[in-house]
Length: 593
Image 1 (cartoon, rainbow, N blue to C red):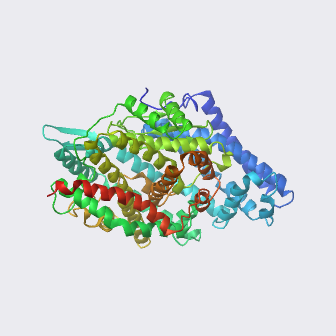
Image 2: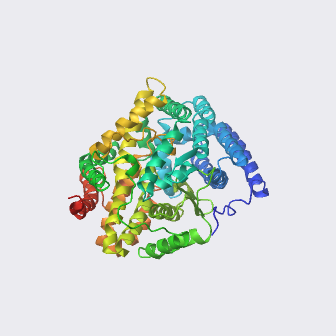
Image 3: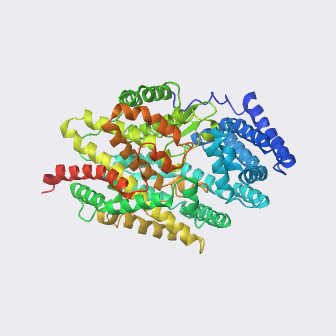
């Protein structure tokens, strides 16, 4: 199996005739489109004819940019210092920025048509009804053509540049880890993987090594974060959003009532997670809560390491218990080199999946080291790939799903694989595995909540003044204390938890934190339905995932009779996690006496 993903289905290289021709076509299409908009979108005469042209252009252009952009960004993610990738990324972003005026004029033209609602129900437009309704909604927040052009071009030298700098600095940062017998120099990704080490001294050494490394770049990264959030605040205000949060909710196709219900339920259940953390601290010999470097400490004697071949077999086997189509997707991903697997210097950290509609395939990036967490991460990303398989069946203009439901299929696949790990284990191994599940769930409930609190406070404070590293550290400490309570030892809180989280550094994806909690809890609710009637659920599952490209979040949930504005749904999902916490407390009660 290759170490890097195969991108030849897109292009063989940046120098290839196919890439260069598509890049020229991309430029020419934008010129032709701009001219058409200038010449024709001056009146609503023959509106239907014009709308057909605009839709057809959007479809064809989406296919084209859907080949070019993923190739560039995937190349850059695998090697952030790739000069060609960085050069072409900047070029494409600049061209798109320059095309902002015609794109804006088109949205205003379509959204401003007096009879658009009636037109959407005509046979030739019914397929595009949601697409057109989203344009109409977006029109309310568009600025003048000139302002939109200025903003789009400005971003290339502001938020986009700041984001690229954060990615570059963190990918190249070296960490000095002082182990018992030697001192090792490694990347952030390599060091972070040792947080799962069974050796407590190694975990502690990694924590302090990373903290020390962060002090080398924290002032620079703080400037990146502060600048990006300042830009988002300013533009959100211009667009007449009440806040960056409101803008993120609109883009997420989610009602504030839904978010409020979920967050309130999460706060209600925090004491249960704090009990789990305090018990884990006691089991590890800590008396004042759990030090953050031991959050991922394994319990028990199960330290199985997985080869990538073992991981492949295990995931495919257990995906097949759900459906043949899910198993076949995973098989394709492994056998056709869709996955960039191992960490290396220059490669971005974390993991992600890119759904590439133009070739109806996905590509996955992970930093696999062989522990159970890596296996679960890979199953998570393959869940995103399966979501892509379903969404690819839609028209290309209905192939984009919002952040909250983006984590549905991925978290569902995690659940399938983790439940299989527990079911296949010996009785004496179940405790550490249940604890491993609770680690992940605590990260999504407590840590995601802390990120949500942190980002809220950062946006608020940034309205007043630019923020430096010390202020960001203070805000992070406060957020972590609020979310983790007395479950953590407050003497060991990572004040730099904002520094290496890519989601904070996207001006177009503010608050990409709470969707992870949504994904976990929504998937828990779905999994409960699956257990009640597996045959019926599997039949409906693909349709549910397809619907995410052409419905609001609340309407997607209604497809399976779930009301996400009702706090009781979220309580029900959290109750499922609480059952595992109660079991963990029961199984460990005699171990602390």
